[in-house]
Length: 223
Image (cartoon, rainbow, N blue to C red; front, side, top):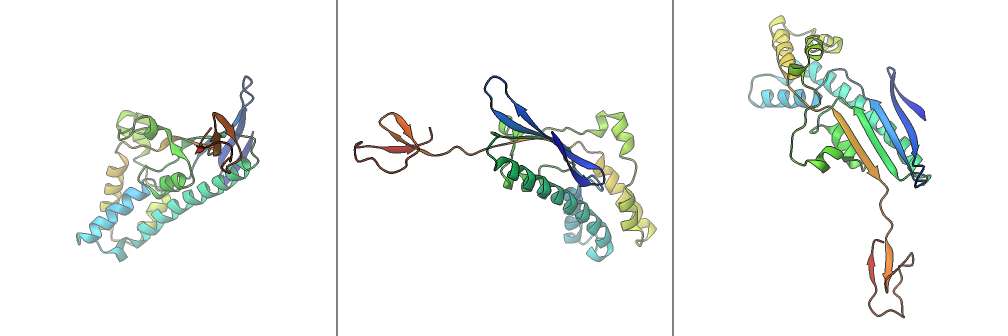
């Protein structure tokens, strides 16, 4: 087991699990990604919609958008550092795959989520219950979390500092309303090594993919 530090005392703990019965090994990873201003994808989309409707000018909230994008990019950076490490470990061909879980601080429609899928990870909830909603974080059902959501991140306060007071209050209220909503920020992903293609000849598997001159009807399959 070893730790991978992302900065700001955020870690990913990586352990190699050995099945004593089969001798198979896999990597288990637990992490907690950067938080900052949460729901970045949600709020960026809200700003885009408000701009299209003429309710806000982009210049007026650019500081807010920049702060959102900075937190989003930080999580993306942490994901890329982690995936580079995992790919290096898997390249040693000792482990069958990876189980990755933790508090990711993003939602399924976010760039961070898509980054993990593009890297080859699969969302186990979507495999088990595709199309169904799962909320792992609900301030309305958790009094401790509900109290925490009343606090405004310092980075958000700083981003709004140059706006008129009325505009600051409106954005803060919109932020709190968004943070009160139930959402999913905790995940369990997995990634396995792709199976090797083997040629199937007369009922026997072979690593050789060349057509056999002996067998009349060889087909290629996964054995």
